[in-house]
Each structure stands twice: as C-alpha cells, then as structure tokens.
Length: 119
Length: 119
Length: 119
Length: 119
Image 1 (spheres, chains in turn orange, green, red, purple):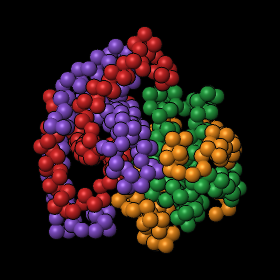
Image 2: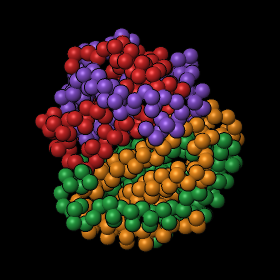
Image 3: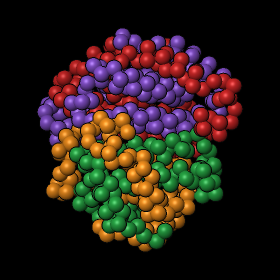
Image 4: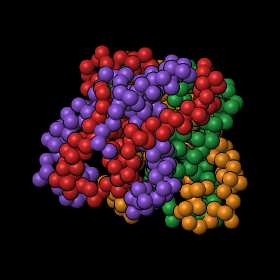
C-alpha cells in the first residue's frame, strides 16, 4: 500500500451519498458517532480472541475479509469528517508525529508497558 | 486533499515505534482498542454540541486544531491495523462501495431518516 | 426504578456463563472491549436521529424495545467488570459525585455549553 | 455488592445537574455519546495490558481506583439514559437473560472461542 487516492474515493462516495440524498444526516457530530460505531464493529472481531490470534488476520481469509470491510467503513467516515472539517489528513499526521516525538522522548518512553501506559 | 502518502507516513511511524520499542504492545487486538479510544476522543469534542455547531469546525481554528489531532491519531492506528492485516485501504474501500451500492439500492434508500435507519 | 438487585442478576448471569463455559474468555480486558461494543450498539440507534427524536424513546415502543436490550447488555458487562474488579458500584458512584462536585463548582460550571465543554 | 440504590443515586445526580443547569445538554442522543466516551476511558486502562494483567485490578489499588472512577461515570450515564427512556434496568436485564438463553442454547454454545464468536 503506497498511497490512498482520496480524490477518487471521495468522488465515488459523494455520488453514492448524493444519489440517496443522505447528506442531510451527515453533520460532523453524526459522522463522529457513525465512525465510533464502525470502529466498534472492528473491535467486536477481536474481543474474544487472544492477542496472538488477532495477529493472524493476514493468513486467515475469512477474518481478513471481515477486517477489510470494517477498515473501509472506518476510512470512509474518517475521510468525510476530514473533508467537512477542512483537514488534510497527511499534513495533520506529520504534525502529530512531530508533536508525539516531543511528548514521548525516546530515553523516557523506551521499555516497559508500565512506562508506556503512564506516559 | 488529493491523496495520502501512506508509505511516507508509515516510514516515520515505524521509526517512532521502533525507537521506543513499542511494537511489542501492538497486537492487532490492542491496536483495535487504541483505535476505539482515539475515536472516542473525537466523539468527545462533539458530544455536547448541536449538529449545526459541529459543522463549524472548518471556521473555528481552536476546534479545528483539536479535530486535526484526533483524526491523525485515528488514521495512524487504522493504517497500522491495515498494514499488519495485509489490507490495502484504497482497494478495500472500492470493494466496499460496490457492495454498499447493492445493499442500499437508490430507489429504496432515497429519502427519510427512518428508511435510512431501517436499511 | 428504585433499585437494582445485583445479587439476583449476578446469580442468573453466572449460571448462564458457567453453563456455556464462557468464563475463560472473560478477562477484564476482554469484558471492557465487549462493553464498548454494546455501548456502540446503543449509539447506533441514535446516530442519525435528531436530539429531539432521541428524546422520544419512552413513547416509541419499537425504539424503547431496542434501547432496553442494549441497556441490558451494557449493564451485564459493567456488573461483571465491577465484580471481577472488587468494585461496589453504589459506593463508587457516591465517591465520584463528591469528586465531581469539587471539580465542577456551581458558580463556574453554571450556564453555557462552552463553559461546560471547557470544564 | 448486593444491590444498587438507584433512587438515592438519581436524587444526588439530578441535584448536581440541576445546580449547574446542564440538563439542556442531556438529550438521549448526547448521553449515548457521553456513555461511549466514558466506556472508552475504561478501555484505555486495559489497551496495552495483557489479559492476565487486566485481571489484577482487585489487588492493585492504583488500577482499582481508576477503574472505580470510570465504572461510576458509565453507570451514571447509563442510569440517566434508562430513566429518560422509561426503562427499568433490572426488569430489562431479566428479559434479556431469558432471550439470550434461547439464542445461545447450551449444547451449541458450550466450548471453544470459535463457536462463541460465531454464535
């Protein structure tokens, strides 16, 4: 996966929504709710699995297919929220990585789960 | 926002995680939990706002800055899950749009919130 | 609703789980995931409704029936987590109310959504 | 924990909210969002812990204190939603247990995680 063509995805998604006249429901507030619902559908897949079992998605076609669907739904809502908010995802992510690098300095953050959690 | 350079983002994020030795905590199960936590931090921004107020993110710099941070965190975890699961986000999204088009035929889906919800 | 007989509910729920040999999946971590999934099923009911529509649950039997089911699932998982954590819900709630009263003093908190959000 | 005195909790919570004039923000839609946010704060505690570590809440005072606070917040919002929806939690839970017993018959449900997940 080298990149995501947001422009092309948005063209298709916008048409889909316009055809159904669904934009009237898509306030950013409502889209944030929908995003959280889709995220929970991803969580649901893993809730009773052991951590090691969850790491086998890529070699389990049935599991992978479910994960693909949920990732897609999550991405679509996330993209819609970003566009409606005037946020460029790539730019925002690079700013956030910079911020996190200062918030979690290597010498302090490196190591145990405890330190990780407390940071 | 034309596209998202996933390769470049992943290079930086992978380095960030490796430097801190945090990949040991990043089972897909755990990443799905972290994704849901970050999504809720986005929801938290909008929980007491009216729908109309939530639509003002792009013209409210303070609000926009918060939204940008949460969108970034969500995207980073989503990308990590996708990569560990062997999922190409763009490809998965186009498959999902096709599937949704069949699931929600225009003639049935068009119109009221009730129909939308029941579908 | 005067009170909730937790002891009686727990007796039934414990038997249900024991009969199915499901306690092996119920680490507190997993139960917290299941709790969040059930909570999202409640959120899903309201995601496309207006605030005013969401307030009509008590006079809409179909909506009320869905809400009842989700509230039940949420309560059952919350109770299980509390019991496994050695937490007495009533006692914890009274402590929290005291704490919140100090955190949100009336003179500062009273009034607008903005103040509410910022607090 | 034998029971939860909902009436007494609700008296205190209602006074707290009235004193701050916050009921104006508490549509059932908004309360469902707040409930999901609080639930994620519970999930956050466990996101990087192993399942076995998550089971040590009752013997780890620092962890227990955090869990107590989140359980309290979750219960308060759940109770508010139930009251506004005209739902009696205890009654709803017993109905749900009956329904689940039919949905997951012992002979089919007993045993492995796979069967559990698929059911």
